[in-house]
Every structure is written in structure tokens, then in C-alpha cells.
Length: 156
Image (tube, rainbow, N blue to C red; front, side, top):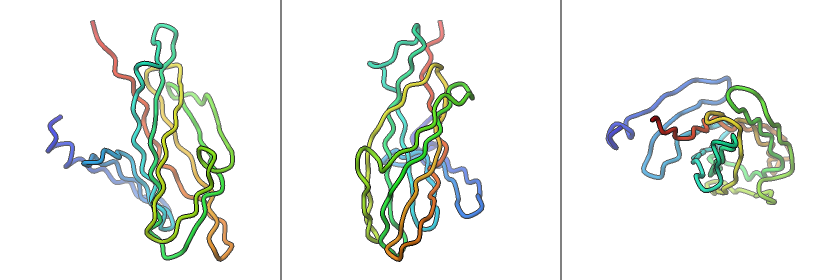
């Protein structure tokens, strides 16, 4: 696909309080979602050097950018991930923060991190949510957009 065509690709699917977008941009965050003024964008990549297709090991990294577009300071308290391999749930991860941090984001601030996942098939996906707390003491869930994990397959 040409770069111009990639930049034109926009698919929107309205959600109850959120809107999912798949976009190709200059900074390559392909999946994005906004819930209650918190924007979560994800860029997945396959990791060739940690994968072994013959042993059914397909490794991926994903970079997540969290942006506070709201007018209130918030703190990310917990993550909840669902990981699928070939459409089958292989893991559910719940824990405090992200990569050992519970970032506080003032209005206009953003936080970015990279993590990884391993699946048993060349195609899978991840999705989930973050639990946030506002300065006013309200807890709320923020959707992490579903994103595809696709290992490039070489056809002979």
C-alpha cells in the first residue's frame, strides 16, 4: 500500500461512550480510541528475533500512548488485558499500573510505554481497559482498542 493511501485509511466504529479509529499516520499509531477524554493509541509490531514459527512462538511488541484530553487530572491505577491467539483467549492479565508505573496525567499530558506479548499462532489480537481515578475521586474505565497481532507469513 502506498504511503498516501495509508494516510487516507480511516475506519470509524461508534461505541457507546467511545469511538474506535484505525488510522495510519506519520507516527504510526494505527489503533486509537477515546473514552471520557482519555485517548489510548496502540502500535503493534512483530518481533522477528524472539519468534520461532516452527515452535509456534510468535512474539510481538506494542507501544501504547495515553493522552489526557480532558480538563481534569487523572491517574491510571490498573490494567486489564485479554489476549487472543487465532481467535481463542489464551490469557487475561489484570494488575496495577503499566510497566510498574501508575502515571498521573494532568490535562494535555501523555504517557507512553512499550510492552510485549507472545501468542501461538501467526494471527491474534489484544484488547482491554484501564481503570483511572480522577482528582475528584471518581473511578472510571477507559477502553483499550482491540488491535491485531499479525506475523508476516512468507509463502513458498
